[in-house]
Amino acid sequence: MQLEEQSLKQITIDVCQSMLGLELNSIVPDMDATRQLVAMVEIRGCRHTVVEVFAGDRLMEAIAEAMFCSDRGSLSEEEIRDAFCEIANMIGGNVKGSFGEEAALSLPVIGQANDWPSDLPSGSLLTAFECCGHPLTIVVREVASESEVGEPLAVG
Amino acid sequence: MKVLIVDDSKAMRMIVRRSLTQAGFTNVQAIEANNGVEALQVIEDQSPDLVLSDWNMPEMKGIDLLKSLRAAGRKVTLGFITSESSPEIHQQAVDSGAAFVIVKPFTPAAIEHALKPLMV
Image 1 (cartoon, helix red, strand yellow):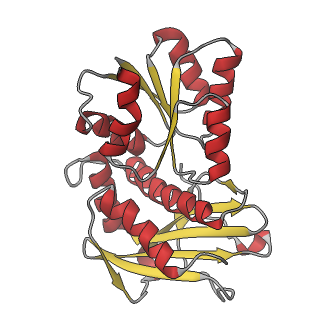
Image 2 (cartoon, each protein chain N blue to C red; image 1 turned 135 degrees about the horizontal axis):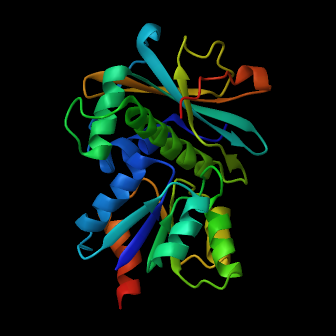
């Protein structure tokens, strides 16, 4: 994979910090699988790459509140998930752009994260931040077969 | 000035609206569409002066919206606001008649830079 972790970090910072004003601090990845959702986009070109963004309920709400400029508790679940999917879309689009090859970017989907993707292949990237007091984790990995992608429950 | 914002994300449509105001375009009537198919109908009904469109959308992609407009002889100015940052996408956009491509994430300054020449 051509993407370096520092580039992935910068992409995420640009999305969350410069556009939404959300401060990010790098942390060691640590996921509570029972309370995480994952938004995912796929990049299909010479390689098949998956970009996954993991966050808990409260961080998703905070991100959505920043995007909608709304008060806490005022957004619907659909609006919150829409905003979170857009974060994955922006990170994924810029990851795709960094590959320097022709590829197609999928629409984002969202679902329950049961665990970290198991047995991340060599070259995968996993980076985490603290954002609004909660972890935000991004995984970029190549997949060899459709069964490795997983099927997040698409909620819209 | 009537501006049509086309994006399947309601959150992103909100950000674009807000960015137009922050960029100084306060005399803008912003209308919205969820995808390219909806946008074609809105353009037919409301004749916006400018279309700001996402690239990847369900039903109809932004590039297909642009090609449909040009094939129908509609010359409405269209610019893309997209997470697609690759050079071939940008070239495809320009070759198809897009006025500009703004890459997400963007700042109000990027909106101002793209739109100001169109206001002359």
